[in-house]
Amino acid sequence: MDAAFYTLDKRRDSTKQPSGTGTVISVTLKEGSDFDYPVFLMQTNVTAFNYMKWNDHYYYITGRRFIHANLFEISCEIDALASCRGSIKSSSQYVLRTSVETLANYNLIDNSYATEAEPELWHDRKTIGMTDAGSYILVTKGGNGINYYGITESQLNSLLSSLLATKQENLWDTISNIGQTLGPSFLNVMEYIVGCRWMPFPIPSGGVSQNIYLGYWDSGISGKVYTTQLNLVSNPGGAYSLTVHPETDAKKAFMNCSQYHQCKVYVPGCGEIPIDFAKVNGSSINVSISVDVSGAVTAIIKNNDGEILATNYGVLGADVPISGSGFNLGGIISAGSGAGTVVSAIATAATGGFGAALGEAAAGAIEIGTGIAAAIPDVNTKGGAGSYYIVDDLELLGVTEAVYKLTAQAPTQQGYPSMKIATLSSNGYYQIKNPQVDFGDDLTIKGLIENYMRIGFYIE
Image 1 (cartoon, rainbow, N blue to C red):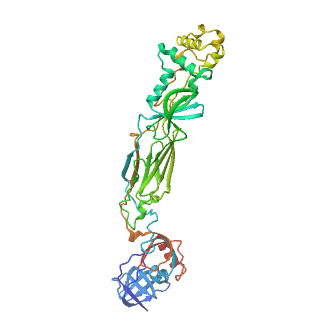
Image 2 (image 1 turned 45 degrees about the vertical axis):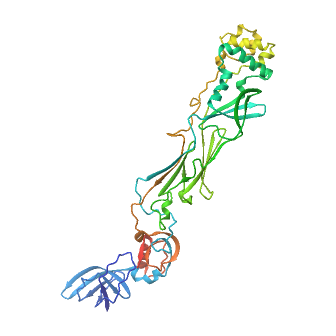
Image 3 (image 1 turned 30 degrees about the horizontal axis):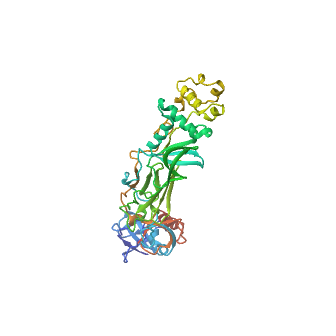
């Protein structure tokens, strides 16, 4: 019988077949040979060849031996991919990866390529008007319920000064004026202050200005009245630009996924918010920040189509501990004392001896403690009862991008993701999921083809 011998350069994971008729040599199949791993005897020295075709199948020559004069022996191994090339090309498979243009999907995230360990960091930071001076939200009880006033630090100091920091020589006039204004409705002016919160930004524009009322007492100090929404800012400082991954092109759309391009938006009070760059759908994002009167912050990040990319929540500002000791002018008046007696009692209490100034019945109705100093609150605008969220620069809202570059790409050897069912009719690299091989002469050939398909092979 005859066999065709070739000198062929080919990779083992390829369907490549030799061209031409080769060198035809008469051979004898050695008795007991396996057809997938045959041994042939011949009288011709074939050491110049590494490949052969016999019985319509292709074989690698794996061993060559000299038996004796004019007798040679060669061992062979079936080339399953070349032998079944036609059946492989007409088969339909689920393609994981391929270098074939019509099957590759460049939008799928590709996890096959290594990246550099250290990313390049890019920043886009903007000033959004926050300051260390800030402002205050004073929450009070008044004739129309709970009110929220936006005031400056100087306004807060003026209010507290009028109530609590009166000089000893002016104490009589100050308390007389307050007492005459409020009359029997005045229980404790400090009890009408429900809360006070420092905010790290100036008093927002908008809102209606009106005098601050503590109960029925008009403080004479004007503040801006808010309901629940204190501050809403869309795109403070303008839209935030993002940078497309520098290695992205028509065949590397996957470079703008989180594995290769990470994006975080820093919002004071909310911290860093991760953004899925693949959903940005453009080169910029829009940030809206909402702050309510309690300091609760909501950050909403959208793309240019108005789709929400991320939301996050946090807290800005700090509670300012303003508290009184609860002296009860109403109780004194009901005990039959006049306004002058009340003032005298409190003035005497400043020296720590209010019991001697009043009868015991009246003294029992006074809840001022041991002196006027007890009614003066601990005012601490930064710390004490809490702290505010701050980094090295409170004014900044910024975008940070971390870009990881590929060390190398080899699409002809590794291909791109496909994730499609397709016929393997075009030349190129393929990797198949769960190969379906219903052809081949025996299970050895089927198994070899399946293994090559799983790990990746080439149709040539």
